[in-house]
Image 1 (cartoon, rainbow, N blue to C red):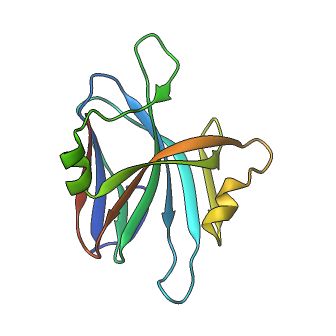
Image 2: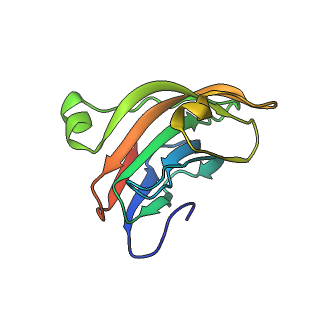
Length: 146
């Protein structure tokens, strides 16, 4: 489990593909109304057929993801889902194209403002985040990568 508290709604990612994936994530760790602070971390690997709980939250959940597919020949490429429009509308996520700053290896970063995560410190680069997952307070949501 990467982020959050006990007795909360969970966000889970399941890799239903034949290739491994890796992801970086950004989420609001603040207390609603009182204070916001955004956390970014990555890269986490999910093997084919595996699921990972990526976020627990007692509040409304909002999670930005950059998901990369790792093909057998090596390297990585931005993951593109194979869904029809009805699945996208009903599923609790939407495709986005927002660049945020990440590192090539493992990283963690906290900022008071989401826009600050778009400004890259040394050793960071802009990576396209391609999903926004969301769910209501206390609701579990599973995001299937297929």
